[in-house]
Structure formats: C-alpha cells, structure tokens
Image 1: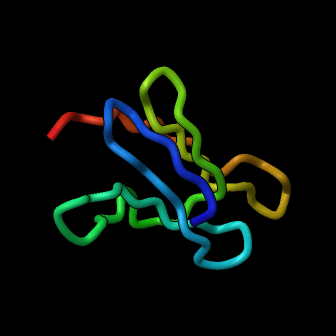
Image 2: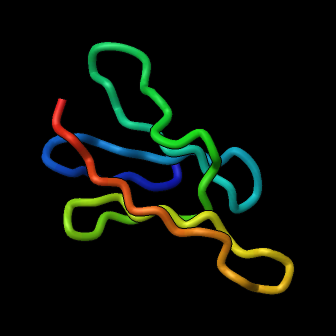
Image 3: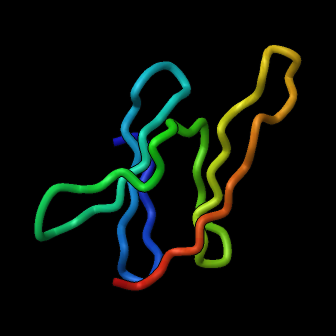
Length: 74
C-alpha cells in the first residue's frame, strides 16, 4: 500500500504497479477490493470529500489529465 485515505467511511488506497504509477482501489470489507479507475494514477488525494487523481506528465512536462471523482455512498 502506497497511500490511503477515507471519505464518509469509504477507504481508498493505492498499490504501486510500476515506477510512479499506482492502481487505486476502494476497500470492500465484504469481498474483493474493486479498482476505482482502470488507468494507473501518478498521484491521488482527498479534497473536499472528493478524490483528485493526477495521471502524470508527458515528456514535455505538460500535465496529462487530472480527474476529480465524487464518491457516492453505497
């Protein structure tokens, strides 16, 4: 586990897939933890009860994409 945090009782964590690329999961106490996003992320943080995922930079140093994911209660 590289990073973890929670939103409204939902726990999220990352595991390193390759150098500076992490898979983002939501912990499921009743079964297998599902991937939140299929594409590995470079960075993730919780901001205002939302996940903010950054996918890194290209060779020119330009940000590829940043996605904000609102967590819905199960």
